[in-house]
Image 1 (cartoon, rainbow, N blue to C red):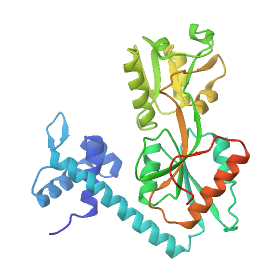
Image 2: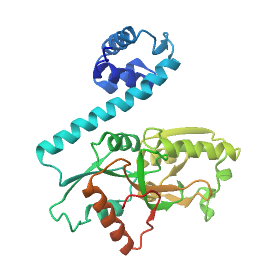
Image 3: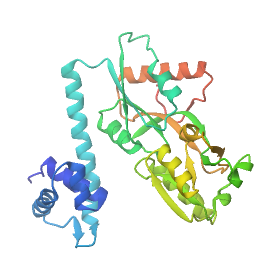
Image 4: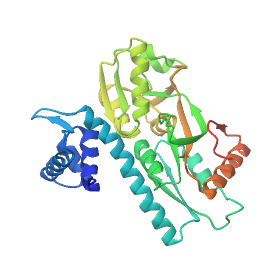
Amino acid sequence: MILPELRLLEAAIAVAQDLNFSRAAVRLHIDQSTVTKRINALESQLGFKLFERNHQSVELTEPGRRFVEEAQEAVMHMERAVSSANAAFRGAEETLNIGATAATDPFLVSTLMAVRVPLYPRLKLKLTSDYPGELVHDLIAGTLDLAVVTDVQENPKLSCLALAKSPYFVAMMADDHLAGKKEIRMKDLDKRNWALLSRRVSPYSHEMIQMAASEAGVKASDVHHVMTAEQAMSMIFLHDSVALLDRVGAWRIAQNGITMRPLAESNLHFSTELAVCSDNKNRIVKEFVKAAGRKLDTLRRPVQQRLNLTA
């Protein structure tokens, strides 16, 4: 059996993620006709269709869904193999690559970047900022050693150390009638214009907020999907919206006539965790997690272990 080339797998994964050939082409930095040729070549090689497509829509077939799930694993393992080999070649075993999202508390990031590991006094730390989904991908692929992730869905491939937990916050105009409340309930947001961080920026949070609203029988008049807290601020000014944000983002825009209140919903909270790949055997990573836990403990930050990282 001849195995498909990596570029064909990547094309299938990109199309499956977007269910759109044009967006997949942008993601892969190639033209749409090349994506189409690669999918056709892959389907011809496999002997079955991965996608049902017409001029209006693209859908995964059941064989296609199963194939793409396994293909994602194969590509991640290949990326991890290359990353590990490159690190060994460069002698980079004493460099830790740490990821963080833009929503991560800057104090928390600076605290982690200041962690020193006694057994590795020359250890170097390199920081990468990215979206939650990309950070999880890079952890599993091995291009990141650790990541500070915010509101990422529980994943059996990750081991996580809880660092902080806070409610969501609602940002609004200071003269909004909701500003008179000490805390906001979901029902208070019914029939209002909302500004939400987009699925790409915060996929799990986006889903949980929508689910909580549905359970409470609450429906927004309109929803503006934004990439940053600053874009949410524009929606507040222009459309009298309320913005549902993490604490860091809400604090950042709470000025010049905008205020913020906590969203008091027991099933909604914004969690920050230090995550590593579950099968990571790197001793330096384990020692760093121990040192980070001790440092955060001394600062009286909430640290609670969910999965065993320090064994």
